[in-house]
Length: 171
Image (cartoon, rainbow, N blue to C red):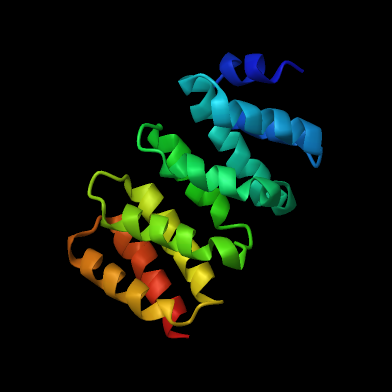
């Protein structure tokens, strides 16, 4: 399969799932996808980010060697929101190594406090922060403060995810 050609052929859930199924647990195929995600043309990067997140949801072990590059890509200011959204989405499904937790937490807090960031990125960031807080209980208070400040002015999605996160943090 010509991966780039297939990515450009159609932008749909069906095509995304089909390509993710083709990649399966194959490290070489996933590496080819990551090459497109990290250095492809903007439309290819945008579409491949969705495939990366689907692969990571079903096979988190594929993501682990690429974590630092995925985080670095999400930090870039000139990337499409789909890259940020799918990067944060995939981070929900993987164990973030201790050495990266501070960097990822800071990125999540930056996303939560940036009014230009889409709701979906903020929602996924909340979940990533909760997952990190399981290993770093001291972080819970800061997460609560930020979310509580967002709730009165947030969209329905922010209020819903924020409420769920606050419940998880109270446990």
